[in-house]
Amino acid sequence: MSTPAPECPICGKPATPADRPFCSRRCRDRDLITWLDEGYRVPVAPEEEPSGN
Ligand SMILES: [Zn+2]
Image 1 (cartoon, helix red, strand yellow):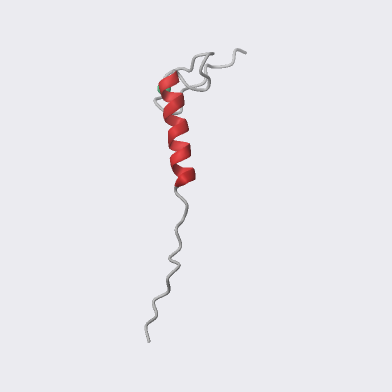
Image 2 (cartoon, helix red, strand yellow):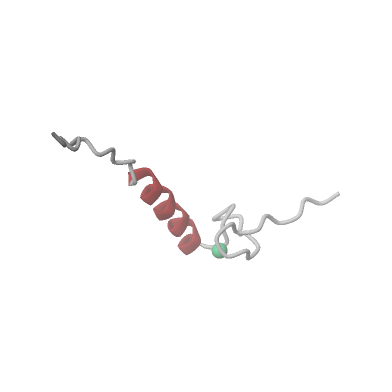
């Protein structure tokens, strides 16, 4: 049984050995950026409470 070539999670193209599991460096960077973007998106809790008094 031959293992099927993994598909690039970004664009769905067959991944290349050099950039597995992505098809190209571009997709790899893109994934990284997406990951970082999500990581940076820290849930900002509203610190200031509405002092409705
Ligand atoms: Zn790709």
